Image 1 (cartoon, rainbow, N blue to C red):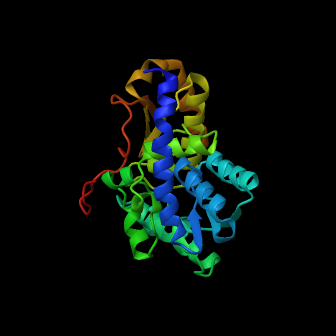
Image 2 (cartoon, rainbow, N blue to C red):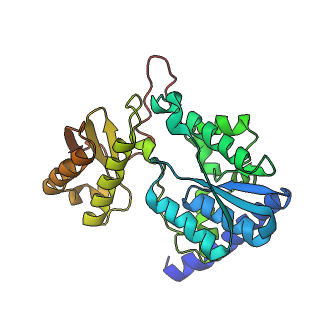
Length: 284
């Protein structure tokens, strides 16, 4: 199947998914979108704003766990679309339950985030997340925090998948339609490895170096205590040379002195690998 055939077949898929999404959004009079800077929340914000700009706001938190390029994309969205963007202080770095990095760390992160969004908007709008239909099949403890706070998931309600979100992004003319997924930087820390700003800065710097030197789009520098395990897709493993690993070790240990070892993981990239069951937790 040629490129033109793919493009044409994607059009009705995008149109149908967008219609379902807009139908869900139409029923929400005032909405505040939790914008992470990923493609899911960017598309949601764009569709919602273009349909009803006066009824749509976006809230974004800037913390050590949020990649800088994600914040830049949210700011670019606001400038380009004229959206109502509010920066919130989510406060998870003051929460020991989050910093200890239990297996349900995402629950504590989202609890802090949604409470901060409610506070800045005085509860005057329904908070919407970018969770999509595919996310329901993954380990997502943050969804429990969303349910407790009546956060809605328009993509889930409209039965929209990740593939359809990317199709909508192309229909909207968004340059980031093929943006690789990049969860918060804390997702790179294995369960039980304490969340600290310097560990997260080391992760961000390390992944940026790998992408810069190899062109690999999906990179995870997972931290397990004092060890960093570099995950890339199986097809890209040969691009991660011994020299690159040595440079990574020097860079990351400079940012986070507790790092003593950096190695290419024996296993290829897999999402969610750093969530590990402990004696007092349930395995994801």
